[in-house]
Structures are given as structure tokens and as C-alpha cells.
Length: 501
Image (cartoon, rainbow, N blue to C red; front, side, top):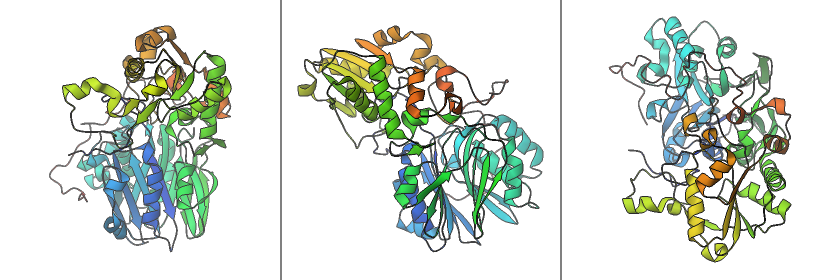
């Protein structure tokens, strides 16, 4: 049975689907270190990127072991399980599902291989040609032993890539990777391994972040620089778009499988990444504060208090207050120990809506003109409930400011938004959205203001969820989306599957 995770998630309103995070990946090659524990703490730092499942693979040079389960990193692992993951290299993963459902079978790292070696793979991102890759696996697999976890019900694009990497026992994993990686479309940051070598690869557009760090006795690869900080690794550089990195006893070497065409995800700066992460040389917290300053310049308002929607709106609210001169304050108290709950609420509790997670400070709010800052509006239900709650607490005016432009298009590169039909900004003008949520006024940051805050050139950013311009073309046959592989792969239900921990 699914368990509550005790985390205050972005979904403040029960049942409201906000922008769901991408996955987190981590890898370490460090002889003499407790690599499983380093990976555990690295995943801890990346927990915000995925809370559905977690897993670690480790190797001592002769044997590769994978341990994974549903739940948070702290729920999946304990001292005993980490002690079983012995070796000098390891990879780890925390998942939010973007292709394939949230099931144990789809937890990562995925495992595959043949008589001459094993491969374990962790993936952050989302491929757009998964259906095509499935057909390729069916064509090339020969016998079922080469399909790996696919035959046991895994419906992820990660399992497809793992099967392709393990397809040819006559080639080294590095050689096979250089052949497979150019065939992949969409967004991917891979951290993978065999018994002796750690690998990392990033798609030609570098849509999702991936960085390299140095330990005293080894190397680290992670989705964000914050994970390097947690394990005491110094930042070296980013994995370049279109680059394959290999790390073993000979050191670090780099191979290029595609020319770089950088289009990093702008939403990493808006919401996805931790505030203490640096992406492409720009601190995420500083970028969000600057977005708030731009909001204040673009949509000024007479008010008494600037307050964030915890926690996603806090840096931008600070910037708005600094630029506008309006005092910053907290008008909401959060319950930090309520996250996703799998207990169905009673009708009485359901009517309370967001009060399970947020409650107003009435003495702060009463009679005040408020500016409420948040990172995005998806369906609008959360903001509608929030505005209503603030008015009931005595707010005189409620002005909503959003530190991203209107989200009008779905993402197919690793962020799970609502469908386009459900996106409130897709069908309504800004003024109409404001009336719908009950705000006295509503302002979104301009695309230009958001881009300027990131410190990146416009042509080096993916802004598809705001513009509908996708840097990687989508399949013309429409075979794309979270469930594209569900029920499409043959599953051997009679075979003995990989044992669950």
C-alpha cells in the first residue's frame, strides 16, 4: 500500500496537480569510500526532484547489486540495506514518473545485461521517441533475455535504453552507448554503470542539468550542484550537451556523441531546482529573487504586505518586496509534516481544502492589502482556494503575482504538467484568469523578464511550456506522453521477476 511521505509538496490543495518535478540522478566512483552512503546522501539532496521511488546500484568490480523500492529515500534505505551495497562505484535515483506509471516495476536504476557484463541505468528526463525505441527493441532483441526489466512489466523509456545498451555482448558498454545515444530524442541525463566504470551522458540540448564534482579520492556526477555540496565534492564543470563521460581507474575521459545545441529548461530556474543550486553559472536563488524584482517593475501595485505561497514563492516574494519597497512578511503558517496523504479525506475535511497544509495568520492579514507571490498557475484551483482563505481571514485586497509567464503548453521533456485542456491560462486572458481565481489583480512576469533573470541567452533556453515551441520535434503520429508504453510491451508474468527488497 502506498505510504504518505510526510513532505509538504507543491500540491497545496488536495487533488490539485501542480508542476511535478523531474527525477534526480547521482553517481560516484570513489575507491576506499562508502559509496552507497555517499549516494544515499546525494539522493537526499535531490529528494525534491522525485518522491515516488528510490534506488541505488553498487559494484565492487566483480558483482553489481541493485536495491530499490517505492517511497522516499529515507523510507527505502536503512543501515542494513546500505551495508549490502558494497563496492567502489555506485549510482542512485529518486523518481517522479514521466514515462510509465508509479509502480515498483518502474523504479530505478534499471538493470540489464548479458553473460559478459551487467548495466544499471538511472535517468532524469523524458524521451519523445519511446514508441519508436520500443519497436527497435522488438526488432533487435532476438530472445527475451535481452529485454531486461521490460519482460517483467517495466514500462519506462529508461528500461528501453537499458535493453539497447545491453544488446550486444561483443561490444564494450562505452562503444554500445556511443551507438545508442545518438538514436535517442527528447531530454535525458543518464548516469549508468557496469561492474568497473561509471558513465554519464546528457542530451545534445542539455535540457536537464547534470554536473561533475571532485572528491578527495574520486568523482561524483549529480543532477544539481546542491548534491555535490552535501557529499563534500567540489564543483568541476557541467556535463556538456551531447557528451558521454566515463570514469574508472584510469581517470575521467570524455567522448562526444552529438554536437551541442544548448536549450536548458527555464523552469529549472523558476521552480524545479533547489534554490542553493547553480545552473550554467547562475545561482537559482538569485535568479528567482531577480524574477521577483522584475515582477514588481512590470506589475506594480499599492499594498501593505508582500507574502509568498510557501515555499515555492519565497525568493520571488523577497525580490518583489525589495524592488517595490513594500514590507515582506509571512501571512501563512505551513504544516511541514503534511505531504501527500493516501488517506481519503472526509467531506468535512475536503471542504477545508488547503487548511490541512496552510493556515492564515489573521492578525497579520486582517485589513491589509496583500501581494501574494507564487511561481506558476496551472489549473488555478490552488490560487482560487488561497485567495478565498485570505479574504475569509480579513484581507482587504488580494493581488496575485506569478514569477513565470502563463503556462499554456504541456512539457514532454521531464516535467509533468496538467493536460493542455486543463491549463487555465490556455483558454483565458490574464484578466479572466484573475477574475476566475477571485484576485483583485493578477500579473505574470513577462517572458523577457524571466529570461533576463536567468542570465542566459534566449536561444539557449527551452521555453516550450510558455511558447509551444519545442526544441526537439514531437512525433507526428502523436505517440508521446506518460502512458505511451503502458500495455504495449510483452510481459512475462510466468518468469521469475527480479526479487523485490
